[in-house]
Amino acid sequence: MKGEKKLAVYPGTFDPITYGHLDIIKRAAALFDEVTVAVTTNPAKTPLFTVAERVAMIRQATAKQPGVSVDDFDGLLMDYAKQKEASVVVRGLRAITDFEFEFQMALVNHKLAEDIVTVFLMPNEKYTYLNSTIVKEVARFSGDVSSFVSPEVQQLLKAKFGQK
Ligand code: ADP
Image (cartoon, helix red, strand yellow):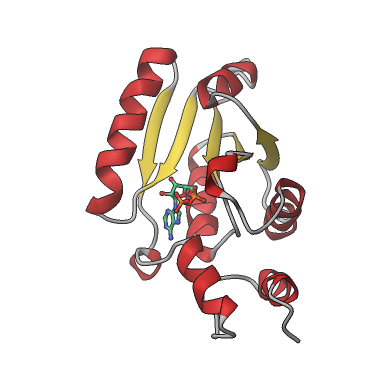
């Protein structure tokens, strides 16, 4: 914790950022003094967008939100969180299918850094089916993703897939 302030880190791939992620960011920003959205470089996921593109998209989408900043990190989340002096890690829980993996990760993370608490937030139910993979699949075949991502992200998806 930095002084009296509660700092939270919201880590993820964000490939690309969706309205589901933004819903979680909004909720986290209401709970904590500062929220850092932290884009992981995790190469195992072979992302569509580069880290710089993902960071820029999130910056654009959260520009008007006080207390929200965007960063990237590699290596262990808990090392990053300690370095930021964060006391909270935020994760989104959409469905029971998220639970097992998230539960395991939170327990391991707790072993690595006892003072950092993982907090799970549920999005509005209308985003519970949404993930970045689905968005990419629909966009790849020129489907309408306007209810999933911002107009800016829609444009960037089109550009990636060579669409007009
Ligand atoms: P994924 O885990 O699907 O690859 P991310 O790594 O970008 O996606 O997700 C970062 C965090 O945001 C995770 O905690 C994930 O559960 C959460 N999240 C992703 N999509 C949603 C959504 N639609 N609603 C709520 N939380 C979400």
